[in-house]
Figure (tube, helix red, strand yellow):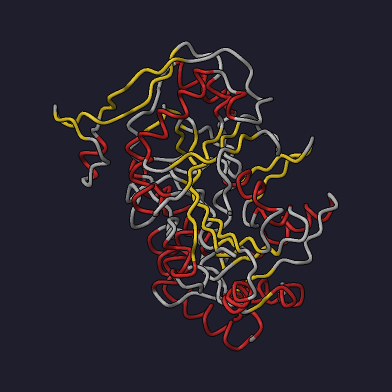
Length: 428
């Protein structure tokens, strides 16, 4: 049975939670392998809406083992807040596993994230202020705190004191903030130890053993391809690898065990935060897309920047990730448009460019070249077969499929759990 990677193909918010939920009844494990509580998944089940930030979407699927793997940075306070909120709504969260090697977000990470972003002024990256970047920076600088450290007070105190030796100088002398006491951090983290301990496991071993048994494991990426720290629009990116390659390093499962890469791509494009966005609409069309698609961040509530579908980005994502299948979401949002522009290439200083420019400067100045496709007026939320869609909607899907570098295997036609058209099986 397969190991499947599911990632975002654009700048996030494509609907990965719904795709994970679609597959949930057919997989045994759902693994979050990167990021933290800086992004959200919204899953609609019947008349209930669930907004998840740190937890894998698979926690809502009966019988699935949700896993927070080593590549994630964990804010333990947020973890238990989310768990308690689900418990209050009757969701069974007892199967959750957390990697002993995952790094922890502390109070000082959140503080440094916020003051640094304010200090940048007009050069702000657009972070969520949740300490994600500083926690990953500590990981790379080898002064991070891992989940397993909470269970050894001596090691925990030593690591916290070592981290704060430098950070307090930064906070006091550069940002004019108060110093943070090591005892404050140590005592807070130790307070979580008893509740956290039963959840902690060698998740790499667990996942490899599951694959050895022939079980199906779904690796769910946070954020998306264009926010990947190596392959995205740097420096306006997240601090982890949100592409398919991150699934291996972020979980401890070898690359040769992955069978399929599913990329989620919205029928238009959105972005939160700063950075280049060639098809961005700063007009009534952009406002229309935002309102129709309810494009506001699950985690931050920030209005998302909106734009038309960008085929070069989809092709780039297909190449970088080795995409085998696209899931096209929110096609229903486009209902009512007479024509629908699709970006097929860019104009960069008078030269047509068919792929995403490697130069950040060129990408920032890229002007989209559009092809206009016919729109439709019919309500498509009841469609369950491709043939149920209006001819113009079918032609839109086929056109963007031909431009995007991989087949479109499923199409979201509404926010509900069952409002989806499946063209090709995503597992078999």
